[in-house]
Length: 141
Image 1 (cartoon, helix red, strand yellow):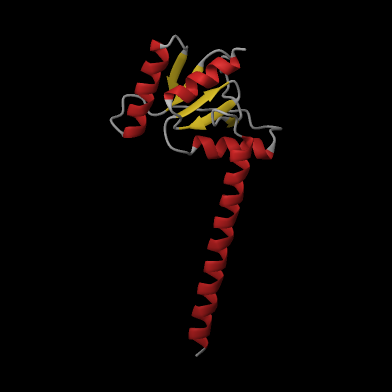
Image 2 (image 1 turned 60 degrees about the vertical axis):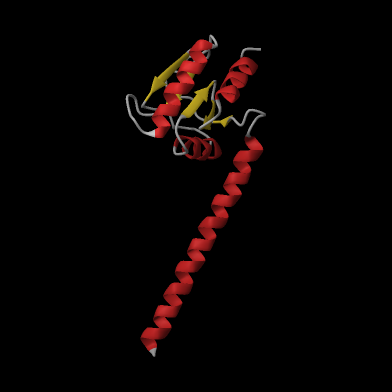
């Protein structure tokens, strides 16, 4: 009887933790959506050494997986439209003194669907090429 009660209590606790984490993720997703501009880009910690006029495309290089192939297609599209871009498989930021919400947003975007695109302190995971082009043009004004 005691083991049955302990099992039920453990299951209820685990379910409660799962529900709480799901709730927190949903709340944060709504916060990210509220922070997004018209092109879907949100404020993120800028990579160390990022040039203000260059789109940074993060995805594995020379990889046959879908995310890397989307990154290659995006880079080709941007180059064909005269938009400077670089591909990279690394993303380093200086986290000291950074805002906690900014770091959360950075982590959410950086761990999203590839490719991850960064431009002028804003980022988006797996954006459409036209979104990146529109974001670039709006950042040049």
